[in-house]
Image (cartoon, rainbow, N blue to C red; front, side, top):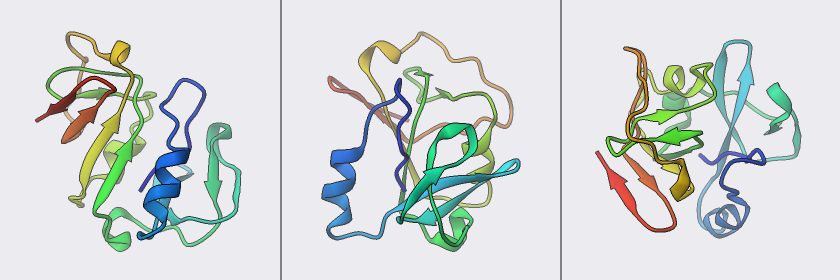
Length: 134
């Protein structure tokens, strides 16, 4: 599963073209307080103006996702991420165990991300100059 980037996030357009040749791609869609995986398709503006595909809304388990690429605003060396504060990805990962990889710019690394009990770390953060792993 990939995401459609906001202006301050890493753009995955080229990665989607490469990965989509041999893989079924999913994108997140927000409905109310929950996020679902939706198969790649025609895009429309969804929650918060983020482009989302139309289609079946699947949980992470139902979609049988191998890898979820996660956006972030900041991260630390322990692979904790600061999202946009609504907890969509944290709830999405409850009861599912896909690999979670965030992509970021080097300057988004901070010493320590403030966390709460429900926050789910990612397995790795990939930046242009380094890969951080849990």
